[in-house]
Image (cartoon, rainbow, N blue to C red; front, side, top):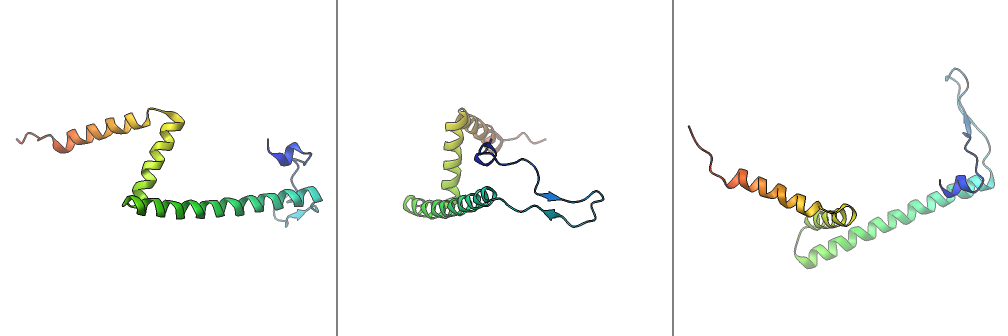
Length: 111
């Protein structure tokens, strides 16, 4: 559940499309609670966007300091996060690389 529905908001739709679907939707007036909930969502979206922008800037700075591309650092971060969340990710990636090396570096028999 979210804070909107937990705090007494209604689960009913605010729109009514009519029975045949060809009519324009009509919306019920928003309550003060509805307006506050919508404003909170808008504020959350702004905060997320600002945080994402900051992460991009931080990523560029760290990658620059390490002398690598941001895409390489992103891959490292993704793997590290997956390892923390699920475990066994790095071992699996290493196993895949071992198999790929066998394909690339093992001479094939020619007929």
